Image (tube, rainbow, N blue to C red):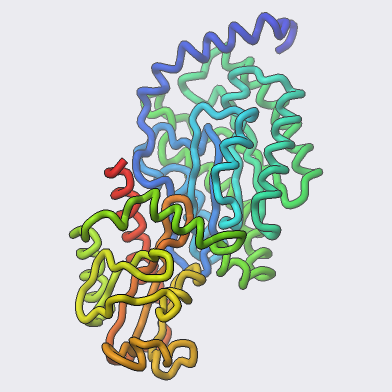
Length: 410
């Protein structure tokens, strides 16, 4: 803060930031599902957590905000898919980050990107507090995440590059952010699995737009340059664990049923939204039957169905028991010729399913609560990776509708 005593600068800067609150609150921000999916196989799962760039100020969709920009940048570099989720807390400061993180199932992600510091720079959070709380937050992430996941800390981008804060007072926050970034970089060199990624200022945006798609594309490229090589290495070393991730940890069945109860999906009637999705899936795959099925303890409940569909199915006697352990879904060209499935009641008996394709369906908290199922009494094509991509897209359509339905019920 130069020659300005901190006890003077802090209230002045905080009052100035508070005076901008109304202007910031009127800015557009994404209202769609807080996730983005880039097409590809063996997808990397990434969580963006924090404030600042994670929020998506200035745009209306996460597809053009940081999740979409980062996912596309990662896919171009890795050749794999990228499923990027975001937990954005607009006013979040480092002191409350660990508490927010405790509500997230971190073990399901291959990488976690932390975007903290913009609010702390504006509040002139003491450097000692920043060091202590950031260290505590990173260690909490390391404890709760999978042992082979990677953690990335994004540096605070130049505060004056934010149009609403581009003023002489913004220079004070800028200087403080640079000191915070130096501390962050030093902390990251000491913490296992943690990498610091500096963020530079994107090209100047219109003051009315605040940020735009080009801003997020700029940051997505910067972040992907550091993240992609580590995700490549992780993919080679831990492919099996990556497929299972999301069902690991104690009590996945309890978590699943809690998620189903929270959504209230079993209490609702079938909807045309799901029916439309399964009808489209049948047409695309050229099969007779499809369902959207939710796991209710040890049985499956169909929320949508087309064609000849078996009823009263138990989880243990279904394809679903295998599908929920597959991150990218599963295609079985001929179940009668597959030792895993030939003895299932609906393969050995009516409706004598031969071809099957399924994709795990997740709740917003990441619990795998059911499956999209596509099947036919005649065997179909051999395992076709491009059809698996189509299956994945239909699965995400189901997940999006589950999220919208949950939001409507709340």
